Length: 147
Image (cartoon, rainbow, N blue to C red; front, side, top):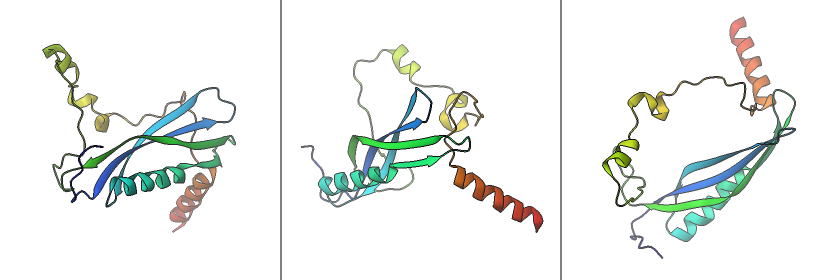
């Protein structure tokens, strides 16, 4: 087992969920990174499993198709050794013997970073929105317009 200092209180869990849309042959898989507060690796594991089970869901999308979300498991669980604050190291990946070209390939331009990507509506993606939530938002917007 990896060495985990006694003062570790936070863990980073990677939870895998599979999403299926009724009538679609393709699935969608999310690898969700979540923070877990725990006093031991065993407690972190138990809490991560519980959080994963909370992902299980079934609902109808705005197109009337059934969406099934299934927690598939934990793909990784790591201790966060630093205190959570600005600049804290959450996790790292160790790579060895990389060339200058390989390192350069790891470093995209600012505009290519995820936070700077446009939020485009892509008609090729399945509609995962919950019809009940969409209806509630429609009612809220309508009541706000009537004020």
